[in-house]
Amino acid sequence: MHLYKKKKGIPASGIIFTILMFVILAGFLYGQVKNMSKEVEQSDVDMLKDALENAVVTCYAIEGSYPESLEYIEEHYGVIIDREKYFVDYENNLINMKPQISVYTLKND
Image 1 (cartoon, rainbow, N blue to C red):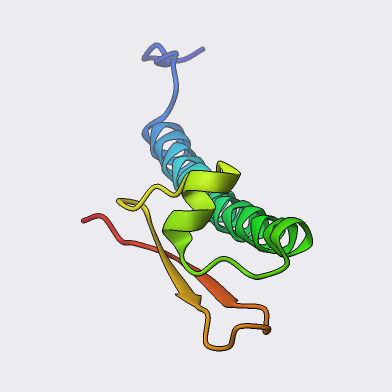
Image 2: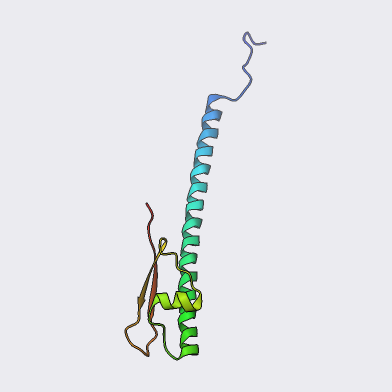
């Protein structure tokens, strides 16, 4: 027989453990979402670069020469470049050499 009734409910250590587990889980999920976002961003860069490479090769096959500029590719081959999101470095030094194409993501702060 007890002189005092036992309190029913979750002890303070249980509440602290639950909150701690929630914070750890939330941090883990945030990190995973951020990682997925970077992977999607890199995938977008790769797709744009592939589209530009394909347009350059198609232009050479059809016209017999490589395009002189990015604007020519956009106008005649339907590649759309979001210039607020990406910077494209298009180096066409020699007439009969395939141009070098690099795509970079612009940081928006």
